[in-house]
Image 1 (spheres, one colour):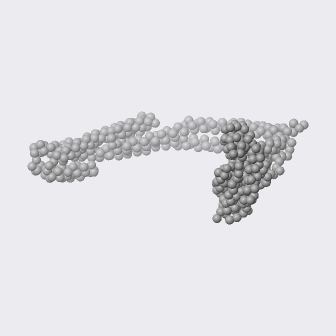
Image 2 (cartoon, rainbow, N blue to C red):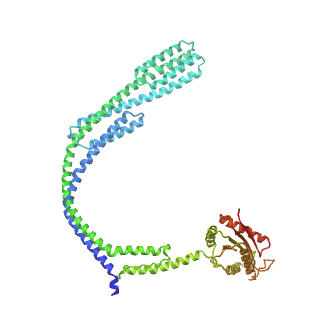
Image 3 (tube, rainbow, N blue to C red):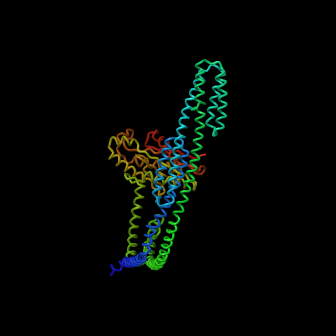
Length: 535
């Protein structure tokens, strides 16, 4: 009977799950049968309507790219750019031509004209680039030749005229009209005439004539610059014409695609209406399903989820270290598996608390001597420093060192050394009798004692007891030549908090360590005390 009771929640949960699955299976079959027509409508939309929209978007994109590339071709500044743009134009034009049947469309003539105009624009751009390249080479040769004449000139007038000619030639690139170029040509002619009137050598006159021919000959820089302006003007005009032609093509394509869009729109509206009808039916079925599902979820929540949440809160509360002192039990009403789980958690939490307490104890205990370790010492002295500051009572610290312990280890071995450390620690711990005091292993062969509310007299008394207690053990130590047995040295420091409230951890350790070294300097097996009162 007990086993059947503990399976109650599982059976309850299973039956509700099966009911939900059956409900959803019914609704799914119902919706699938109702949406068969919707599927057919969507297939028609996918096959007939969407391709038309995609085709229109592709054509518009191709036209926009064609317009962009036409501008790029007109503005090409070098031959590689021209070739790249021409290749892209060709590819775009081919793609555009494949997007519709031009032979059956009134766009055939416009497409043919556009293709021809693009070829003529490309030829003009190519011609312009050749002229500009030749012009650039001629300018380079001209300025190089002028520099040679300038450097070899010994006549100041000739030098000044050559400089004037060079400056005027440099300004040619800044002019964008033939009138400005012709005006500059007249200025240059006058400069050359003044050069020819100078008494120059025959070779020099030939060089001046050569310079004149390079600049103002039939194939000179000025005439080439004028031809470049003419070709550029023709290129700009042709480019604008092509752009207008592309716009015309785009407008005609838009008209051609309008009828397709209208047909596609009607199909889409019809499909939308059918989907709306089926959606309304599915919505009603879904609403009924939702209500039934919410009812089942409510039953699951009240019977299982709510109790599990309550169990989780109780477990969290019981597992929180801040609540360890509370008498907290994990308990759930009922006789099913959730109640049984609560009982299991109670047992588990008790075990965890025991293990945590053991771990805390281990973390604060030296494994060799069983005395509190350095971590426990640091926690204790920090707390006592704060307490002494609040209560205005003195605080005493003792640092204890086993004399010549390294020599003891070297002579008797580490096993004997560990035994010695354990015995000394036990003796010192038993001598520290107050529950408020702390005896701890400070490190290696060093130990420390924290004596709260202990003045100088009490500190000296306790230190003397510790020295005598270890000496009374009479542990043989041949390398402690003065005594022959194990002894200790103690540094004692007492700190007054009545006039000085701030004694840092480092300051306390430092003063106590100084006292320890004084004890060692005094011959060991003794203690030395310092009292620190502050200002």
